[in-house]
Length: 348
Length: 131
Picture 1 (spheres, rainbow over the protein chains, first blue to last red):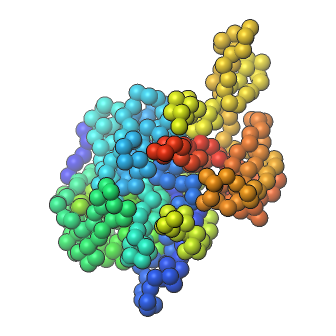
Picture 2 (picture 1 turned 45 degrees about the vertical axis):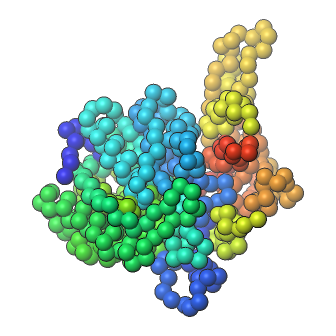
Picture 3 (picture 1 turned 120 degrees about the horizontal axis):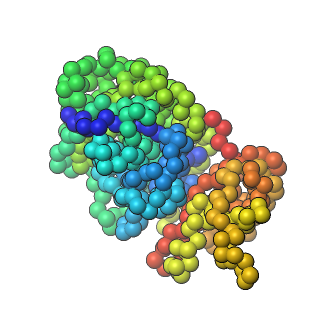
């Protein structure tokens, strides 16, 4: 496991979920031949004026409000996504400019399927933990793509989660340690010229998601000399509801420990944002002293695991920006025709 | 496409950057100093990010860029610092709006320009999120 020489923590966090939802039953009404079990209840849909950049900006603003720092104090703005609006031109510079950062920063885009955001988080720990910087903004944001009628279409959603890494003295939650576990596993991929990703159906499960997430989480617990019972909360990447529930059981967590951070049933799989907004939802309710295990997953494949401890400072900071539940509550259902139009699925 | 123009306007579009005069007047967007004015008479000033709905209208016949939004809602928002600003409203339906309701700014897509799709972002307002 890795621990920075200079202790670090999350000094600000912010979530963003679009207002619009489409019910899984509505997608099934259009595409499914039978009434089988659906992986989620509904998924979030970006409005016609939203993309990864606009969602990252709002999540970033929420994180800055809770951190109570001037945007000029940020040393880096890093945006992890697999749906950057440009193939060539960074999202990071647009987000940084909108947030009002200094120009003397690192601004970049990160990619690793659904764990691009936590890759930025780990790098932020390195930059702050080495003393090279005081504050790094790591964002995971996606407007995920799913081929019409494909299983992915039921879950491919949109959201953003933003975490500011800073000195442990100002932390809302300290990051005790992290580790990453990766392998070359082709469970899900998309070439640059293809509009939709390809996935390996059942192959995305056992050798991909479950192997990487459970290995990373178990290894981190073992190296820290802990068990799941030492944690109040656990957040796992959530491509649907069943996968995180199953991997939680494999690692030793109960459904109760995972409930606060499991949002996939309501908003679907928000890819790079999924584990990060799960953590945001937990930070919205956690108390000082609570321990949180976070394990992301990115196809291709790998998992980043973190152990966090909530500090006394969280209580006062959480109300400085909208909580994740505020975004979940403003749910506006749309039909498949509207969804298809907004997501560019209608061929002219 | 006029790349320099898009680049030059990002402060006002992304951060509601205007100017405040030493006598307290505020103007938006920022303008160059006029003849006879001191260069530093107007200083950069960020408009308030929240306010209340002063007036609004729903436009149902719009340019082709708005094909994805059959109804475009445009409002005038009285900001917390007293300024009035005209902006597109988002994340709402006409039936949800009433004069005086709390509004807040967000950064959203304003569309694409040029045949190679330069993405343009800017301010819009929405009903204030209730926590």
